[in-house]
Image (tube, rainbow, N blue to C red; front, top):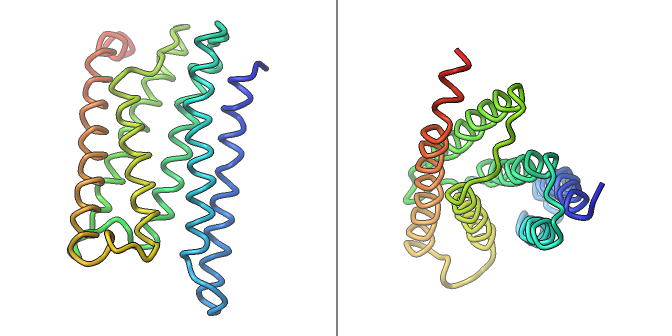
Length: 200
């Protein structure tokens, strides 16, 4: 296994670490030992490290000509697992809302898009076709990562993220991530329309 693929697997291994830290911090809050803020600070650091490996493994693979079918398939899958896992944690913490209005449906759109795209990828694999990540897909991933970082930062006592400012910020970053997810999903479907139709 080459270095980029090792970085991809490392990113996947960080996901259970994030989940465990979230669980521990939630239990500590229940028993009044500390708050979710501490756990989210650790999660933020791990998430940023994991996201950086996404940027790193792609660059190394292209520069050193180490692009493999495994990397093309597992790299976007690792992104999906990391992002969705962290978003579910934020949803449980009540972060997917603005002005007391729940925005959890955006997470449903994101998960649905990823299931559909993964299904198309599986169809492609059956025909020995490997679909690499598209430019819109990368923008979608960046918008989701940015949204997660902002929502995690809102747990800290920062003046910017208080009251209406917090609600506006949450609404903007969640809406942008949801929009790019939807657009990239439609683009993905259109570009692979022939593959889908031939699989009927």
